[in-house]
Length: 203
Image 1: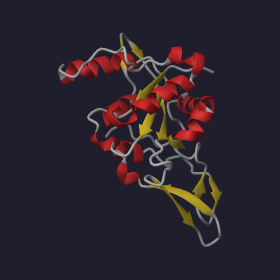
Image 2 (image 1 turned 60 degrees about the horizontal axis):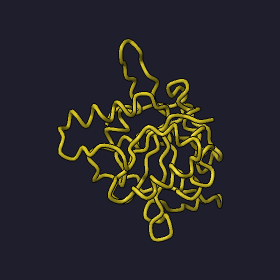
Image 3 (image 1 turned 120 degrees about the vertical axis):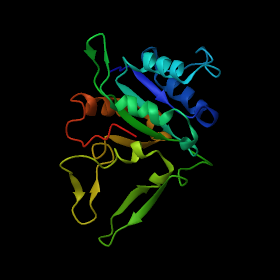
């Protein structure tokens, strides 16, 4: 099912991936509400004008795709865009739901080792972990926040990569190969405004 989406990304290093995500959406790209090459240049405008422009694009969306790239924390806007996505916004007496959010990990040098690594546990299970210090706190605080937690394994405390976190991480390759699954998953978690998760809506 198509959902109105917004892509939050660092322009200087993730523009190409943004374009490939929009291309992978196929016909559903008509529901994309974010920036394109035809968007107005806001470089020299005020902070308040930029925020208004972003709010206008994001208000009617239901899913935010965040591209997790190596220098994401150098962006002036991504953490604010996520905060807006997780907040309940009111316009003309109508309050929007908070967006579902999915983090797409950018491939760098043909892999993802810059952001993820494996842990081997005493019971033999191998789990994936992430260098969460490389992303904004508002992202890491909305990870592993399912309540009550449902563990795949009680010994190693592994959780489901999609349902275990309100903001799930997905590799670029997997996301592009099955984009509907991951957008739908993010949307489904947002339908009840994040019930079942401890949402941290502020930076």
